[in-house]
Image (cartoon, rainbow, N blue to C red; front, side):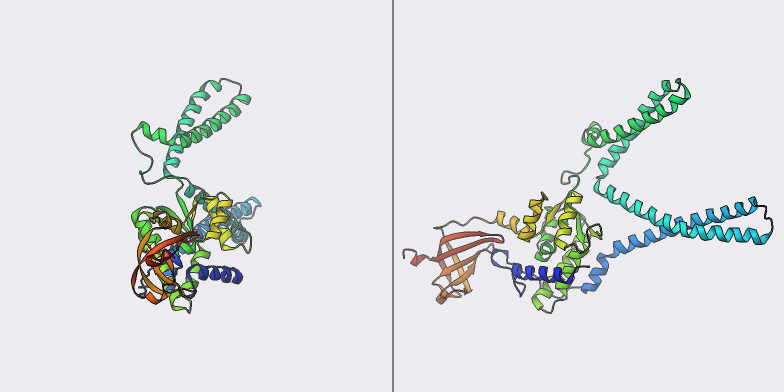
Length: 406
């Protein structure tokens, strides 16, 4: 769970980014569908956590299965011990079975949980390895065993004391080298058979850790549909709880944005080009903030961090974690505006300072026009005087073209 202080800090950061009413600042303005969602936020949370609950049930069944096997072995051992002591009556035999079953029940629980932990760790390791690398590594392992078998034939002519350790070492060495060479040369190995190890639009290790700011932005679904975002998207419980908190906000604008974000999450989970995975990552230190958890998860999984938070992006960049920003992408695709250029602009409202009028270009860039408050609601010709680059995009200043000579 997120600490109350951490949640309050991130809520304040969100309001600074999108404003208390849910409106984005400047060039980051978003037009969201304010219609009520089809599903309540709690139902969306339940559906997103479906995979995690199913995994917990499977782990519980595995623990009970291992425990059942250990209990059966314990009961059989108790029977054998009772017979070995010379007890042939029903009472001592039954007592031996009960004691063996009880010991097996306790030992089986410990062994079962250890087995589940080992299986989960192995599953996480295999999740990070592309299927093509696993197949190539398995092929290399098989070839290494064949080489070890051929090498071990003359080794059996050695004395038994030296033959068996040498053969065991040759099998271990050849299989290990074969597996590593197979993984490193996976592309060349598949190329021998004219097969690509993965599609042209996919690369191994394509894992993206998504921050709540990127989901609340709303444009990530468009990037998924267009193929700019694909692979595995990791959503932590902290991020999901932040979105849930926004969806339950008393502010109508924030509540609408939060529920829209939950709809976006469900739409991404149904899309075929991405695999949305809810991560319960408890490996970090106690009281770890959500920002630190996201950076650590992206660095540990060898993935990239997707966020619109400039502070979080700087922290990730300092730790050599690749960062993708929707704001940055939108700003890179925005046509440049230069000082001295004249642009038509419709003034929509007054600025903060006296006499200022504010309008927006077609791409959402905010333009502040001096001495234009009397022309609110009209389309005027504006001469650009200055362009400032902000973390959320461009901020353009100008004056009326008829007054440009002042």
